[in-house]
Length: 207
Image (cartoon, rainbow, N blue to C red; front, side, top):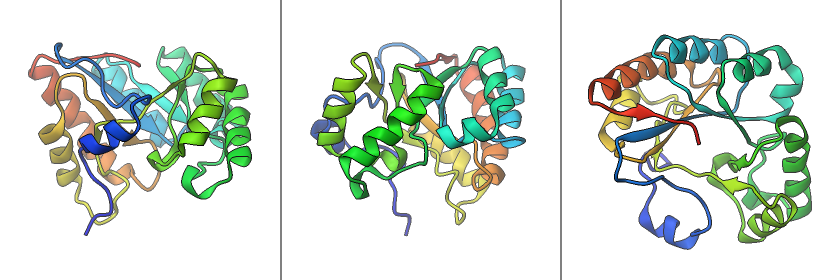
């Protein structure tokens, strides 16, 4: 039994109304996002694949990875992709005290300097949201409405692709991961999904 939902439920959107779950549903536009990078090889594969389809995406970067792999981070920037903050050490908000969580987020912010933040695991307390929005007034906290499941080692690469094409609609924010754990599923699903949605007449935009 998978412990995650591919499609974000309405109840969560209702409980966290200040977070961004999807964009406007009236245009054929979708938003690809990648979490947990940047790292060599996997992020480079994503960059190469996006470039071959002339697509821009949003990368929610872990500060520790930005520090370790500045050359990969610079490739993201020079390719014109959008950058988001994903904390410095991939902290789970529900299990972390507010002070530690917010300072870890700010440590990443000093490297990424972005108006976008995504809480790792999608787990964040309302008190943490409030403090982050006070300290970084223009920040948007970005969630998603389609989770590819590429991090799930029990999922086949084809099932990952099907997750994405079955659940995506106008305005969807889709999550993939540029991580070693996800790579086997990502390298199958990403090119197929890009090809599929372009043929369906969708445009891709950054957040």
